[in-house]
Image (cartoon, rainbow, N blue to C red; front, side):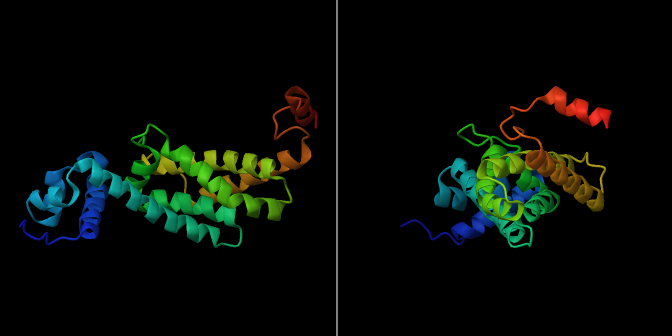
Length: 207
């Protein structure tokens, strides 16, 4: 009979998360995990058999942590704005997990960032429709465009290239939010992309 593993599966995943937080997903090897646990590699392979299984568990655990940030954002008085600020907070507080989820392709080749955007889009759509009195199509356009700004800022933070303070970041998000909402409501055909761009910009210039 094989000896009983003294570490639970959850303890091993927690240890693997710490390896990723310290050194990134590329550094998550059986040896690194064993060192984090203070044991040999045998318990790792007894429990998981392959390191791919470990990495899949770590990605799932990272997604659960990210969901906690998202849920907190959705509980705020303006849910879609809360989700944006929580996205940036996640990037600041969990940069290695942000890299794993949003800057590292999944095994199936899909972009984690785009999959997350679509998921959040569906969750925030009802609040956008209700608060701004816009259609589902308009809400999706609003969220997509605002998310692209938020994702860019978060990526700058994670890669160490963001020069903006929290106050400046909030001002950027607020300003863009106002602009996109105004365009959706006041420019016929904006959401569908059928508006006359030249005419719209000419009107702005001539004012």
